[in-house]
Image (cartoon, rainbow, N blue to C red):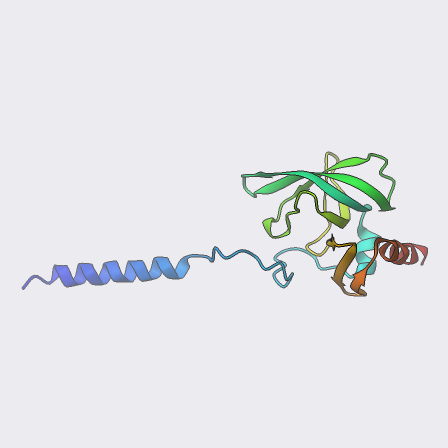
Length: 161
């Protein structure tokens, strides 16, 4: 009887089991912000205080770039500066976490950091999307649905303190 065949089959089975147990999921992110990786998590007051620029704007175009890490470059048409001194009507963004990429023709309130050649998000929870005139936030200290004027008033209140 040839004993090498059952041994080879057993090794092949164990190898296949090992490979399948090590694969990562390819399911898309649900965007629920529960998986923050290495991102810091800020309260609303901390985001306002620590962000160099806070804007309300509309993404005009995006370009996903392969690389290590992958990134997305976008242009943002600034509709309103909520904090900071940006005078350009269009600013460049670079986002490095695919879970938080932006979509063209979507409007956001963004808490940003200036890197010198582009702006980037301050943390995983620093992009608030607007849908049908309503900006939803789950930030600690600023949770609910708001208009852009209500967001601007809250930011002004934080900066006045």
